[in-house]
Image (cartoon, rainbow, N blue to C red):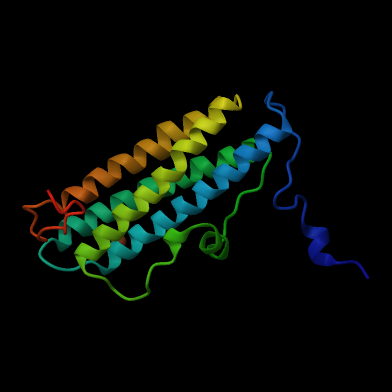
Length: 188
Ligand SMILES: [Fe+2]
């Protein structure tokens, strides 16, 4: 009996399709793995922003409601750029929520509604997680000669997350309506 499910798959996850962009299969495979990890983070950030958009409350409700949705849209656009780069390299993207949960720690937020401060703190942590992963992956792509992947990670992933993180962290500053953040440095 023929396995109908197996028959419908035209490319297995983790395999590479032949493409003609002048990069070896080894280099492309490495970039696809790196980009799928960043794609999982980006999908998790996208969904974290929509959750925050829906669930925020308090004196800064309207401002945060709008800001969170703006960042959601930017993360969705970034997700598309990363996914299409993976396909350009001949790879197969992750795409479904289960894949995101297994690939990114950012996806494991509580179901409950958090305070505005906790939302902002969680989003800033998420951005930092993406950035800590993205910069070394960009350098590895550059060292391997995959300039397109390096450019995407630096110009889009790093820049978008750094800028969004700046907007988020400004709400947690000393004179914010939301109050002070506990300082990481006891001498500060
Ligand atoms: Fe909305």
